[in-house]
Image 1 (cartoon, rainbow, N blue to C red):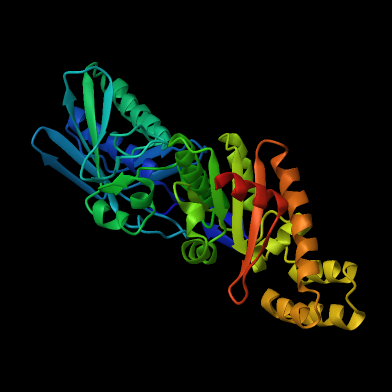
Image 2 (image 1 turned 90 degrees about the vertical axis):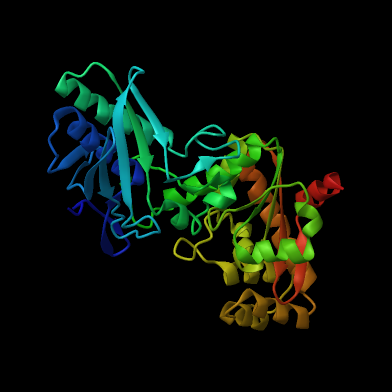
Length: 378
């Protein structure tokens, strides 16, 4: 049955779903109940770590040898991803070992790189889902008066194929999906989920022994690094931070990086000159206003300022500044402002600089801190 819990996103109410971790815990409890009582459960329920109750009907129930198998269909709510609609199975059987043993089977990924929630070699079933599975199965054991141990194997029949469409191969999780979730609930369009993904990559870079980091907002930055600045990426991790530049810098401080170089298109990074650390347009734009203000400081006429304010792209601004001989001065002024705001955000935890480029004009310049960072990398 569909979860009725909703959240507001802008002017819409969006229905939440439940995580793969919640599905695994529900399935494990259902399989344990059937194994220990001989009765098929008609309904499965639990209260998520967020405090929201979830009730579902089993998607499948069967026996495989000595194991009872229960499956729960993943519901992503209005945040549909590759896991939406997949069945998460739990295969539960009695064990000679005490307690609840949790393992991953077919379709559940295996960790191959350090820095993830689980150690290298372990099934990619994260800490909170493991806690949820153990809690729900232990409740069934107590209800049934069973004092022995149980073995729980989580299986996602279509997980290996679905994982090819996720970040798992990039993160070093091979052979299937991860069983995830800290709240047990999927909130549609959750910015925190995106930040959590960025944190995983930054944490992995730190766990691999790196103390320098390259951040870029997206595909343009990646392409520029590959085509025009490939020497920078040799033996240095590159993490895409989307619009969450401030959050990525805070994470760099958390994981003790020594130097951070931010590489991005002017259309994104020029906002840093105004201290805008979330560059999504719904939070702030200010691109033309910032360019106009710095142009005015550099001696631009009123007519030029008006033309800059009416421009539709930063490349159009650069063309105008080029024609009027102001491009270098304005870029220098903007880069100095970016340097100040980036250093203020870093708060002395690490050295940070920025490299600015345009798809039309190529490399536009670097902040002073960026020049120092790149010199130290030579």
